[in-house]
Amino acid sequence: MLIAGLVLAGAAALLHVFIFYLESIAWTSARARAVFGTTEEGAHATRELAFNQGFYNLFLAIAALLGVLLAALDHTAVGLTLVFTGVGSMLAAALVLALSSPDKRSAATKQGALPLLSVLALALSLAF
Image (cartoon, rainbow, N blue to C red; front, side, top):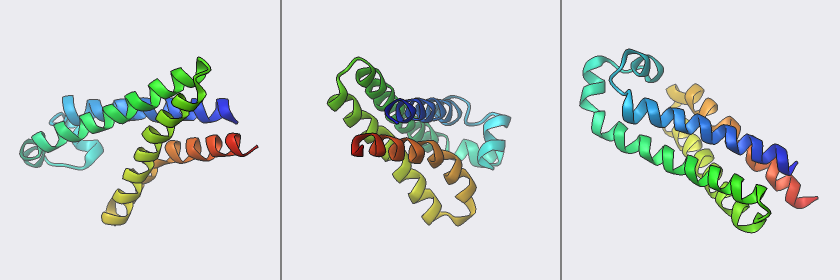
């Protein structure tokens, strides 16, 4: 279960790197606007907020990826602490999105599924 949890954490981190790209680099592009359902005017008006939010996602991805690397190198306690911090924060953010914006529950599910599975697999690996 440990390996499955780490692989899922890595996948969640890669998804959040992609979200970083969409929010911080490509926010006003047609693709990002389609993903987030924004208009061209809305995207330009929220560009600074999205830029900041994208870096938040990148930092969570870095924490999770660094944790995966450290856990794989047998620094299990530090590695899992970073993984749980990264994917736990991703999961918490997805829950906040789902609860605060019911119309975005589909996005919250996509954002939170891999972190949830990672947390569950890692918790099970520690329990048994």
